[in-house]
Image (cartoon, rainbow, N blue to C red; front, side, top):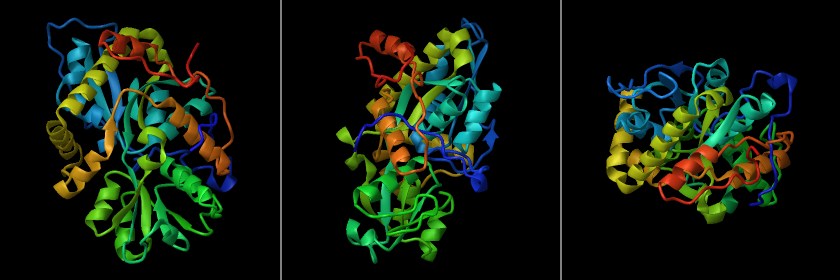
Length: 368
């Protein structure tokens, strides 16, 4: 896949003016809920420059750094007397709106809404300050009707939403095959059916779609219903890595409370280290957090394969976000924006250096 330069902003189409632009890879709705566990700071612990930090994330496995970091107290530990106030979101646009409104300070979010939020504000509202997760996206199909990748021609394949991260990836893959699809309508050699992740399993069971290019845990839910994994998106990326979750921060909060931001990043880095050192315990912790937030834990047949397909890491994999942007532009969905300055990795690199870890790169898109 090419790593051409930046992307993004959906072409303004009057009929789609209300379309949530570039919805995050794992968006299931649009509401925020203050239902996340409330961390309690030690009463005698020293506060940083802010009495609390408001963080946002999704009740989704690709946001397990936040799920586990809050659940296990690993984020709060680094913040001392500065208390965490957590909110959960079901869609990227609502989390960006909360960041813009000052309702949250730091958020775990997908690459597309990060880019969209940055470009829509003229580069004024956020920075990407760290990576969090890679992978966790699969093409799953009905094995009775689709045996090989070439069998996709003429079939109906679901993606979460027009212009979202998986939709762009699938359109780019189709173009690489030499097939033709109208990006806006989804009609062509393959029918791209934009379907909300929460109803995709029902659409598959009813035969309305023959498969789906979707994130976890939707992919593993389909497999539990009899679908087969035909392609893991990681296999078509260099080094089998691509960004699925970033950490973003309000530019104002970063300027006013750099010590708090650095403490959250230190907690994220140490949470990812704990996750990778204790995968079974971390998986159980993430599922326990999901149960608290949604009222229902994931069954083992969904949880286990979904967890195994996600890599938790601190590197934002900036070049892959750049490539994702270029793919959306080439698909005809996006105008090419200026992403210079979207990253500020200096706080993360200070944390990594202190941990004896190598610095990470911003692919030339960082603040200077």
